[in-house]
Image 1 (cartoon, rainbow, N blue to C red):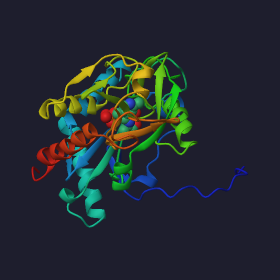
Image 2: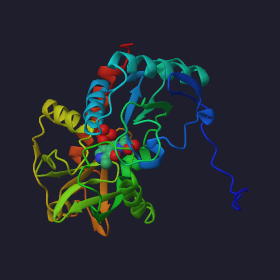
Image 3: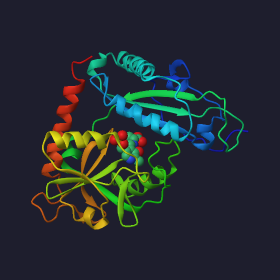
Image 4: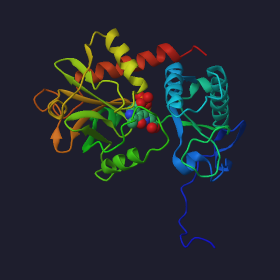
Length: 311
Ligand code: PDD
């Protein structure tokens, strides 16, 4: 019987992906309906940016991947060298497909491992091969207009589970929370557990107060973004005090600046949360502030230093 729905599905990218040892066009990649990633969201993923053809903070991403896999008791089927080989092959094939040199491309790699295919049973099935999937897409930079204007966010209670440190493919909490901001034409949903800031649906959240950058401590209540370590390093380089400690709702709404960070957003200034204009007591009221600008510039310099002309 065919479905009564006849929507035209969105067009899928025509890029090459990697699935279980084979490279094939993304639209043709197929997995079993009994894959535990499909049935339970029983898998782990990573999102690694590539700048100038080179994976950025690759080791840090793979360390987090390994930590998450360990929580799920899934064995990593590859060494970092083998992962890198797959990633580099995909990146080169993508560059070829758009007639560019790989070193002239910025891409975003998505990699995922699920536990594998088995009859449906909640207990972790032993002795099955994990399903390994990797794809790449162009890294879409945030537009200069948005960067200059900053973004609006909404706030919400963090209703997700208490293992937010695992980068799991079960992302219903992220989908539901992100939709709350999408419904308001806002960029992110900034969440609080009780009075404490945790993170946004797919970004970490930072505040700036009296020249110091603050973020919540790394624990099980948030995903430690790869930018946690990077922003700490950058703040050290450009002499901005950096402190991890619990942050209250009041501190967020009354901060001099609020920032988001993620692989795709890099760092991004938040200028309004709900109806509150950020930094209304400062000369940059409702605009990206000076600390954001310094960190963003240092971030771009860092990328160039690490990735440009080092292939
Ligand atoms: N999201 N917190 C959550 C819940 C996230 O999903 C992400 C990343 C981050 C930032 O992590 P990083 O700096 O390593 O990108 C924080 C990715 C990009 C995603 O799911 O697409």
